[in-house]
Length: 341
Image (cartoon, rainbow, N blue to C red):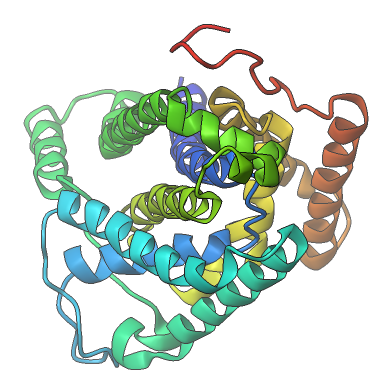
């Protein structure tokens, strides 16, 4: 029974991480899946959302901290929406000089901007505590829930060990429900948006922006709206990560985990399909986490094992592109009415 509880607790942790990645994939899907914006700078908005939420909702700087700002200890909801707003503002500023670029140049510009953002966050000690990172980021309702769990276990000391282990993980169950609720809300909102006339304009721009411009649409402005909206969703994903991990630093948002893996998830699940974006996040993270279990059986160094895991994901992506180029689900053909194919 204890082994079963251990597996169950791990699955909760897995689902929380995959759920956060699913939020990031929904944001990228607005950019690439529906508008055709080749944004390779996801990690920048991801980091901005995480640091903004940490500064708004986190504790004041400690005695040994280098930062001198932040620590407003505002509620989690304020941090979450603050992350979305700041990410949207930064996206707007980035979009002004970049959105007139064609796909390949836009990709180069966004990845360069994302790395610039990450290096600024890494070196701006007065703002982010530099390489020592942001610590003690509070999780929503953590105090009351943990107190309730501790009180229950003290009141019933003869509770079986397997049940104690399950109850002790109660906060993770709460956070999983919170993640899934936010994911569901973002999914429903995204579905309604992309099935609206506005969403159909985005698809027209993706397919042929010159034709969309000839139809009287302000292509630049629609691209800007898409960039800002997707960045706001990605920023919310950063906030959710920060409040779960309780610690962030610039290394968390390196291109592999902050950009490449999210792109693989979206392509694997099916770009232009919100359900596919969510499915891709869970499938790819499941494969990535699953390969970690087999690494212990290989007589290789940690560096080589990590490289093999990256190669495995790359091979999987190649197979999907060869045999299922539309992704696991693929883009829906009819999107004018909500929830109908």
